[in-house]
Length: 250
Image (cartoon, rainbow, N blue to C red):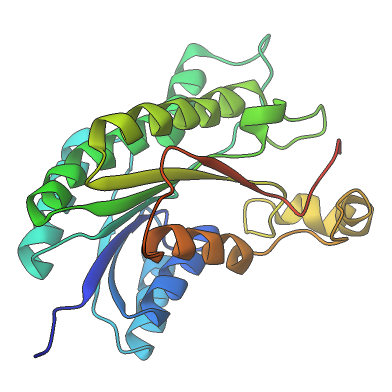
C-alpha cells in the first residue's frame, strides 16, 4: 500500500537557510510548499525540488500578512491533504540602533521575524491537529541570547524579535503538546545571501573565533531542522537549540 508523501511548508524558502531546509526535506521524501517574496528564486528552488522527484507549491507572499498565511495553509491542505512540518524560516535583519530607528521600522522587524511565526503556526496548527500531530521548527538566532555585538548586521530590534520566538516556542510546546512538537533553532554566523557581505569581508577573522574554525553553511542548519522535523521517537519540544560551531564574542 502506497502512503501519501509527507508535506512541509517552509517560509523564506527561496534561498539561504530556507532553501537548504527545503532541499533536505525533499531528499527525505517530503513534498514542499515554499513561501517567499522572491518569485525568481522561488521558481529556481522549486525546480531543484522537482528534480528530486518532489511535488512543490510556491506562494509569493509577505509573511507578515496574517490573512495570506491562512489562505496559503488552506490551499496547501486542499492540494496535499496534509501539512506535517512547518519551518518558520522567513526573517529580515535591521542594523538600526535604538536612537535612530523609526517606529515603523521597528514594527516591521517584529512583524517579519516574530509575527510571521504566529501567523503560520495559527494557520497550520489546526491542519496538523486534525491529522493527529506534526512538527514545527522556527528560526531564532544566536542574537536572541547575546543581543548581538556592535559589528552585527542586525541589532536590538532583530534580537528582540528572535528572543520572542524562543518564548513563543516554549509556551506553545505546552499548549500544542502532545500532538505537535515545536522547537526553535538559533544559528550563529551562516553563509547566506543576507550575511555574505560580512562573511566575505571578515570570513577568516570570524572563523578564528569559532571553535570549529569555520562559519556555518545553510546545510548545517538544514540538517538540524531535518532532525527536529523527522526524528522518531520524538521527546524534544520547547527547546531553543544553538548551532554556531561554538562561537564566542565576535
